[in-house]
Image 1 (cartoon, helix red, strand yellow):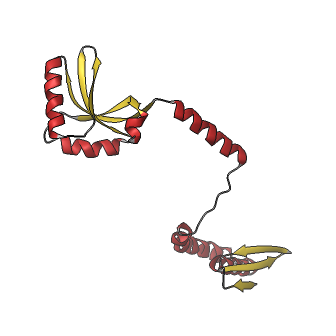
Image 2 (image 1 turned 135 degrees about the horizontal axis):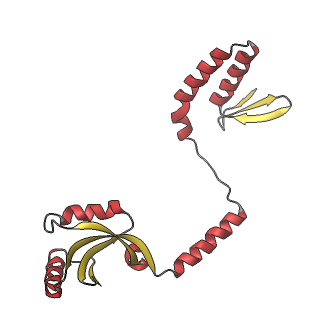
Image 3 (image 1 turned 30 degrees about the vertical axis):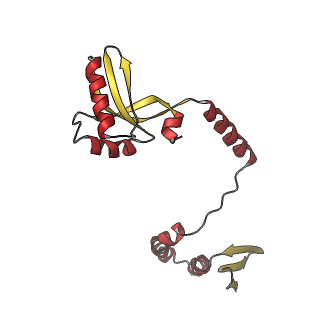
Amino acid sequence: MVNDEKSSLTIVVYQNTILIFRPLLALFLLFCEKIIRMKKYSSLMLFLVLFLAGSSQMVAQQNVYVKEATIVTRMMYHLGQQNQLNEYVSGWRIQILATTDRQMLEKVKAEFQRDYPGMLVDWKHDKPYYKLRAGAFASKLEATELLYRLKKKFPSAYPTKDNQIAARLLLGY
């Protein structure tokens, strides 16, 4: 066994095979090999449980490098190209009002724009209702943040799923 201090790796030669491990893992493997030779399998199981419980945080801190296959890269490129062709995306909005009275809709919309300047607001006509909606969000969680602010002024507001949000609105450009 050779320990390389610069790279913090341990090189182990085992049955004519060169294996490279982090120091703690190398010590673990050597200890397990000794326990197996002594044929104390219950001690091995206890040690495995304790080692895995104690090293779970260390494993999460190690870097992982992934080499993507060429076919996966090509597929991701084509999916990206197809998605750029989509004008609309699915997302969330806050519905402020649903009414059959168009004049009421216009009044509430003007009030909303006065109280919340710069915030996206639009309306949609789904017969017989006019629906006033604000914002454009990718997730319900993001929409809920706006909902919390709007509930003071518009207590009947609620988040709603919208499959026809212009991609430029959702992405902010």
